[in-house]
Image (cartoon, rainbow, N blue to C red; front, top):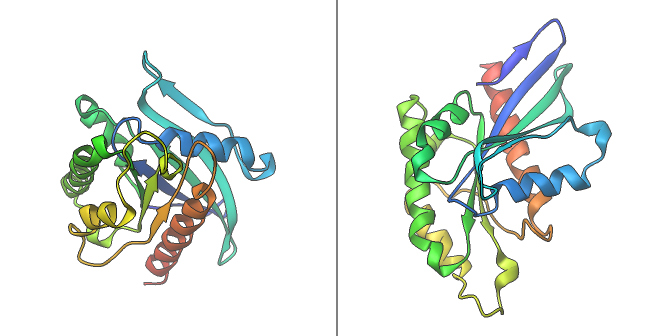
Length: 204
């Protein structure tokens, strides 16, 4: 749930990047951190395990405009992709306002994508949140591998794998978090629909 600081006239919105291990969640935030102007961005905090896997979260605060005179501060987090860290995933999801699901385009990750997506649904439900009502963007990452020797899933296949679990379609973005295409497009889309959702809740 968005946090409203009336004295500072600031609304804090939390967006979580979710998905299977090594799918590109942290790489998305690293790319944003490298390319975005420092005046819009705070310090990135990352906690890693051995093997450079994110154990807890990456946190990157951004400032994005105003609503009714309140500054909007967007906080970006990632969750660990490994199944054994599910309690950490749940902790990071607490108070989430919007989700980017980062799916891995490699064929060998097809089952892991679906497993992680259903895990997202279940973890939200444990916190009395409904995936069907959550601002959500599906990012199909590693599209830069198309044409390489690594077998890659088709975008339609990936879309079907994930959207069959949704009552209404979510925005889908092809991306290469490593090289940049689709990273800011994903961030703009999830920020737009999340802030719109928060604005609606504030009015009701």
